[in-house]
Image 1 (tube, rainbow, N blue to C red):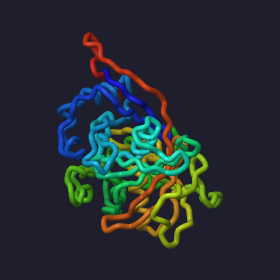
Image 2: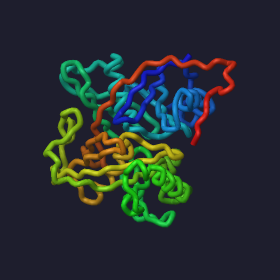
Image 3: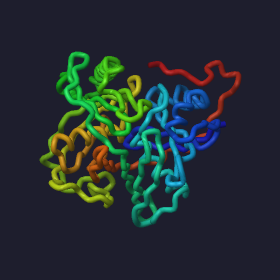
Image 4: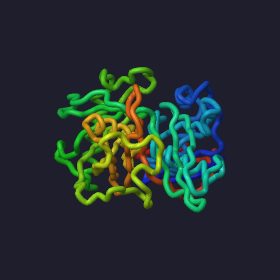
Length: 346
């Protein structure tokens, strides 16, 4: 039997596995990611594939953190394997840790939930009011631009890192919009771009090859920003969420964009994509943005992103959203079930 607590962040599912997973060896979370397919891939398939999941399912295994400086460790998974980063999942883990009492929280303030993930140590800054979680800010690993105007598959993309490597392109350049009728075409373009970038020098992580390779393709377009309020935020919060670090010089101008992030092998992120938003902020900051990015998803959900600081490695993005619990589950596999750990139809 496998137990889970399920959330969604901006419409994107996140299944937190709380029991029933075999031990995954490794000295740190990144090494556990390498070892996970040999030890727990059958659990990933069972929970992610139909009939218990679907082709766009997402979740994580809870594992020990790298050291006592973090509260949790997390191995993120999807239908095609294990990813290096997940911002929407980190937001859900912050809400989960506070709501389940794993981390004692200020009932009328902010509390950091520290999580070790394959790309490094991240934080979920959980904001509570009256003892209720009302917002969570994902503090990413340092994010940076890798390359611009990389020619691929008959177009050009910008490549950046936000815990995972993403290729960014304007949907308008492809003659597409974010209407549902264009979603299949966007997935097709993403698969072609990702395949064409396989092994490209611009997709190599500069320090650890285990983090190399394009994880997702982000299709983005600008939206009108003349009606943006001075401090727009989901659930009534502020653009910065009260986070430490302060705005950089020139802050205050907001930019609104919509995106569709297609990751792994054709999975569509229903949220604005947390690590993808970090990668977008690296590109936008490099282009001169010093304010807030209001980032909308294909389903209309919103993340607010800002740069909390700049390090030698890159910018430190903070991305604010909210996660909501959708259920608690006990899954099992009947040994006589001919479908076994399940299937996907794409």
